[in-house]
Amino acid sequence: MVGTRGAPTTTQAIYRKQSTSASNLRLFLRYDLADRIALRLGVPVKVAGCDAWFATGATIREEQMSDISKKQVIAAQEAWGNGIVRIAKAHKDGGDFEQVAKSHIEDLYGYQQGTVLFKPTLAAEAQFRPSFAQALSYFVASNGACPEDKGFAIKGWTAVRFENNDIICQGASASAMGNYYFTTPEGEEVKVEYSFGYFLDSEGKLRINLHHSSMPYEAN
Image (cartoon, rainbow, N blue to C red; front, side):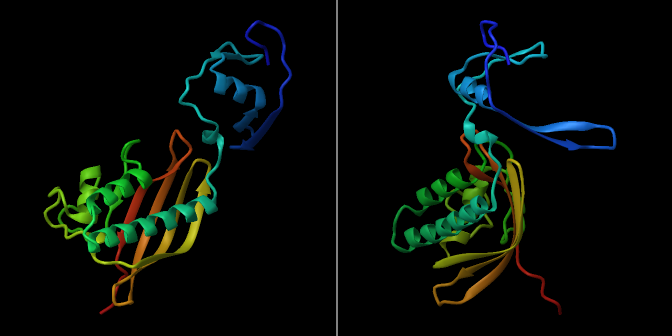
């Protein structure tokens, strides 16, 4: 690598390559210590053998170079379940449950970053919820965005637990499928099926960009 003044610099680098066919080898990961330092400082970087200089902004973070792990997905699921219980408790205690629900969506979903594919369980007329307002309506039915909503998260749930069928992690994205169980005030569990998709935002935070939920099929 060549420094900004033309002098050669020493660096540590890791390369990972994969074959896409019998004759095509493609680079799918490149780690360069000097590049990471330059990224943090906003210093232009010149790579030997390339015609382009690479300049960076402050929005690029080290975490973006990380891969999502199953541990992160499980932590995000626990945070989602705990958030539902907090909303229910705030509603029961006469607190500001709408604000708790807003924080839940803002913290865990990717509506501020891009498209979210949300198909909630108890939705018939507005089956899909592509906006923040529609998601909020589903959880607490406080804004009239979807008149059919009764407020899923204010039904008094006392616990939520996830049972993953499996989790797939692919770089900066991940998906999970399985059953989650919602405990009623009477102590009974309600089983629901789910699929979640996750991505890393610009801060390296795991967020939901796909959430499909449905009741299990019952044969006649």
